[in-house]
Image 1 (cartoon, rainbow, N blue to C red):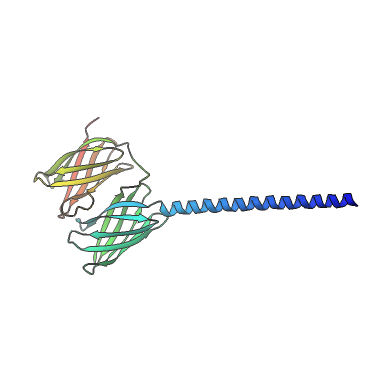
Image 2 (tube, rainbow, N blue to C red):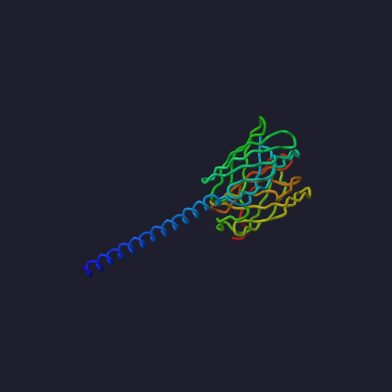
Length: 249
């Protein structure tokens, strides 16, 4: 009789121990899964976070250049155009990179409404409206970028033209897919620019951050032979072209 009770107690203890082990494993698994899901969600929410430099073009005219920051998928910033209109903008970016923003208020009563996309390489493109006017914007992420294109690194000679007239010629030195440079025109104007090359050879360069009085906004490409072509807009609304080639090969 005592032996039967002992066996019963032993079986009961084994069952309780087994239940505790199973429960512990389940709890550990749930916590681990929860942490994994939380980590994945955080990465999705913050994957496009960073600082961006954006150029606004409408009817073939340069309209504005601005910086804004995305933090936890929320955009907050200010746009000042060439007419000194100020727009305070707010927006958000989805997990897939779709960007929506609009102005909360402005100093003139006009409003911006915009939609676009941010790619994983940090480039950004979209369309916007201000009143009855429509335009497009483009730019790039200049901080916290995870993708660096180095295959086009080197020294390039680039010339800028408005119509058939050459307005400037300069050398740029691409390092880690980016560069900064002061360009002097034939009229002695200084254009401090920064740029970045995105895979597969898309070249974006803009006026240095915060400069609204003088500058350019440009977009072009570098082909497999390291030849450069593209278009640019000045802050005065002039449209031009640029071309060049790598010179250190």
